[in-house]
Image 1 (cartoon, protein in one colour):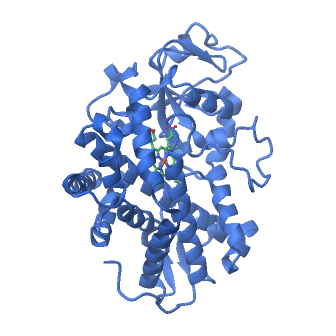
Image 2 (cartoon, helix red, strand yellow):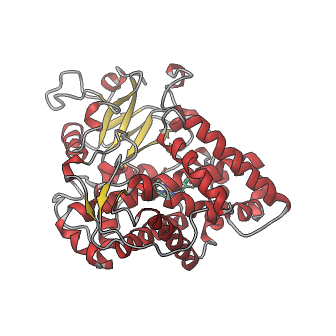
Image 3 (cartoon, protein in one colour):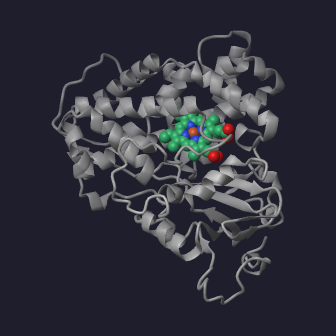
Length: 430
Ligand code: HEM
């Protein structure tokens, strides 16, 4: 498929068709995807293009952005027609070696791009290793690290809750669950953040985390111990997978686990600090913590758009002709606000967890991973609210800046102030 083919495929409207006044492909990394009001942008795109919109990636590489709830559900429910195998992409001949989105869609030997029966075994391996995490222990770990992080800032009366809290807590808890020592976990946090930030330090960060993960797994090969890494290696299903493949899947677990959980914490705290419906929670209403977290998954979900699925043959969806090998980017953010499903977006989402924020179908976020994310995020927010009961924004809500990524939704920083309080735990993070 080329950009032009969006307009010339047999079932596409003829150029200039009055029923489709502007079926122009919009750049996914363009300025409109970087500004604050993305919810409105998705609605406008839906009105203009329907449930599937043509968009272009850097280098004028075309793909479809799936905006409709039903269509996203249908596509992710049908792995035979819409595969996770990026090798099927009909754009590979046009992709240069230094294409900036290669880390997102490139062929990687991980669970993310494995398909069919092999994916089922791999998914079971990851899920069962994560499912063995005890929820009470998980919350105890999260509480302990949350208390230590708050001890580092509570005497000061001000802090940035993204850099000093949300972007640290999930990595520390996950590292302990996987089998790293607390010192190793602490030392890995900057590299994990460099890697997920995708900036200049990303490759060095990836090398550091991968080396640490390989060392951990190698040591567990001969000395089985508690922890997710050891359980993956010694699971019955591990036989079919190489050591390198298990390292890759542990990398997915740390990368896919840390950043969205960090953003879930940050986006929920922002909501609680800026929206009157949730403000009461900061004086101790634990019920509202869960409600704010749920609202965030509908309105500011951490994983906004991901690549995606590739059509295994020519097909039709929502009146669009999809060619074999076309890339369909899944917009969880747009689908959650689909006007067909939520005509009135101001209606409170309390108690409704039909959002698509963790994906759907075979490649959805594994259920035990969702429980781990929830345990870390909820405990982290509850501990913060308990320890700093009068925490308030140190800037106006309008001064808060979202990171400019169309893929992940999270704040650059969340500056707060509070009455200084005494520390609670002895000893620092190491
Ligand atoms: C708020 C937190 C999280 C969110 C919003 C989230 C969201 C997602 C989404 C949207 C996908 C892709 C679904 C698809 O392709 O259809 C995914 C996949 C995945 N997530 Fe999560 N995730 C979160 C936390 C975690 C955590 C804590 C872990 C690990 C402990 C984890 C492990 C994974 C894995 C292994 C996959 C790949 C599944 C596969 O391809 O079979 N995620 N997640």
